[in-house]
Image 1 (tube, rainbow, N blue to C red):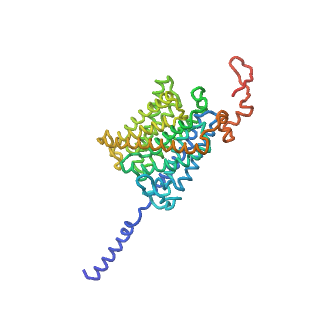
Image 2 (tube, rainbow, N blue to C red):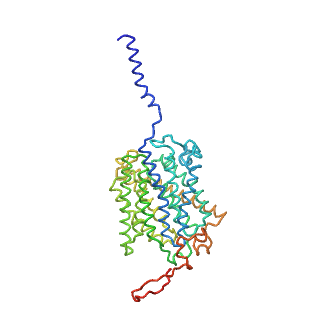
Image 3 (tube, rainbow, N blue to C red):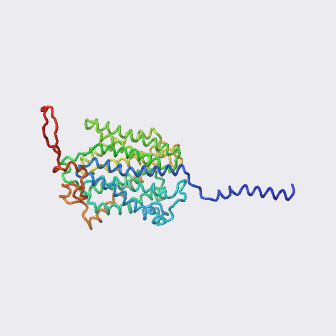
Length: 457
């Protein structure tokens, strides 16, 4: 081969290699399939908060339905703004002493269309925003029908800043629990334990509703609650499957076990209630399904189908006992059972992850106790204990500080009259108040076939 031919060959070979060399030095491009999947998952997680508003709204008395729904919707607004300004940075910024993120992403500086894994950084931020929103909305159920709106607004701002964001960093942002190896696929500790425990503390600090224990406080609209539960179940697929952050086999596995655990939770709650109370109720069925969704959340990316069945079957009676027996005996007024379902269910889910996690499901995870790794259960217990202690203590301090500047609960008169009218100046069912809170209409009774006028409330 002549020198000229050698030169020509080397030139052609180099030209052929240039695209590969250039590609190897580039930041990996986003994947359109993964991006689409996480956009849809984010929207599904967002709809969970309005779903929760309906779930909670149906369970309160008619005079407080709008005020209860408002708590979830104002969280949707306030937390979104905080997350953009600094919350995301505190959760996912550069690690500071394994406790909190730095201010790298203050005002979303540096967060745009560039890849974060295989999806744009911007959509990862938005996906995580939806988790922050639903967490604060969950705890609002504990203080429904009595917390002052101004105090709740202040509480939202402070709580998401100094409880949720640091806790999120501990588990998902590179903090000490993540370094320790605690497993929480989609928010057992970050979302459910923190909100349930914080809700319980808030209920204790603010006190019981007037008439609690001596007056009936039954749900005013169970169909609304069922609709809310259906939206929660639907959105939870985005919550758990989306936490794979890719449209892959792990997302499919998380999707399947999410549904399985929810179904098992609804069934086991109904059976426990039937045996204890004597009747299987609709409220019990949907509450059990939500409890199953809560319990599978931390384990969704680490367990297979049969452990999901076990997790759901255990959580139904566990949460039913917490709501129907423990709460009644201790006498605290967790109005809509945020602690009984999310706190208790999330704790069981985090522990169950330490029992049933398997690397055969997720190589990035760990084996649990039943797969030969007892240390993982210990790690999970540390995560649970740390979350409970942190959320309880800081929530208590936040409420005490707020109480220095404003009353935490509405006046007795406003509470008796109902928060819809006294706080928001609205009525959910305006037609019922056309004639002083009642409607006069013609009905026929079996004893009198002629029309008889009766007054119905």
